[in-house]
Image (cartoon, rainbow, N blue to C red):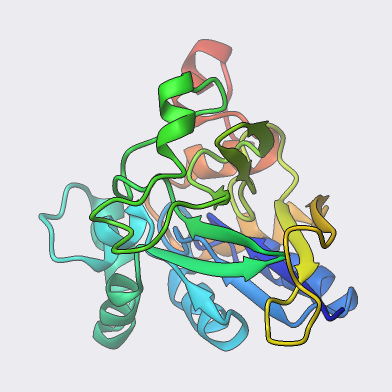
Length: 259
């Protein structure tokens, strides 16, 4: 049996320092296959550098809502929005906007669907406390995912809150965020392990299949220093999120200020 190990990262959000730490951890484990679940850019200061690193290191990338927001041609909504878009070259924007909405792989006889937020689109959010109807929906094919069979395993990002949930419909995995984790500040990613489903490889649903969550500590202060040096708008909220893992919408109520 040939065993494949696949690292899945998501929601880098222009945080180059965290991204480099996570990719170094993946490489140290001897894993060469990496899939990125989108939101490479936005919120953080180094979207262009993170895009280049994604193109170099990831075998596939799917489009997140921030790719639509920043790399698309929609109306500019704020100074920060303009700043993030201007950080990207025209070619980088075309590439980010042009990646697929979902990718399927086969491991141990299971169809694993990798996407950003849901099979509806990049914006339809499914939280940890989802309904039974939302859970079942995640495994079904849609116009967004294309003409494909239903999935056995769905792996997604978007909510910056890693978890695993199993049911009769399948297994749902959220890998958390590399660059903007919001259950605590430590970057998160996941490793999928299973039998390669190539002819003669010994794959099939009777083969072992595993999911592992990883946390990778990193020094946040160089990232904050880079943010300030580059003059990114809305940097205060970003700095607080990086240090605390608390969503910016809750900062005022908690009396949080950057130092």
